Length: 138
Image (cartoon, rainbow, N blue to C red; front, side):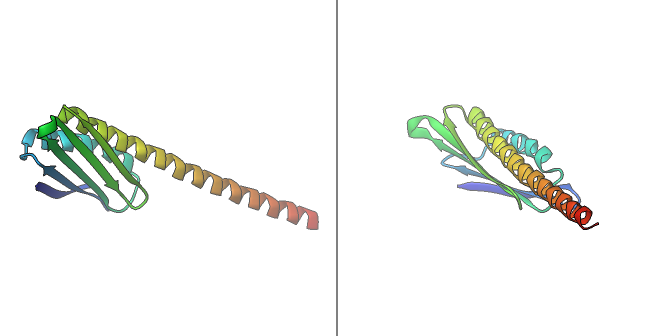
């Protein structure tokens, strides 16, 4: 098992810890570059978030069965996503696992946004009730 790890600074106060692990296969610069290109797509999702982001990618070859697996694990202060893909083409499954993780983060962001919108609506509702009470007293 071989892994590489580094931290990439995205903007002031925001960093991305990247860990790429190769299991049952030798390290490949080409595959690592492909993984990093897929990871770079996540930067747009976290532009406005604060705190560190952890991205772990595990690439594993299953030589006896002639297929490979890829797993993306994304963690931030607000979001967590785990995505898997398997198939005969390493590049395709890396892309597929990254796509699944990306969509999971978008889904979670939507849910968080909905919760924030509802909280805002409740605050407006409460404020409207307070105004109505003030008008009733006058």
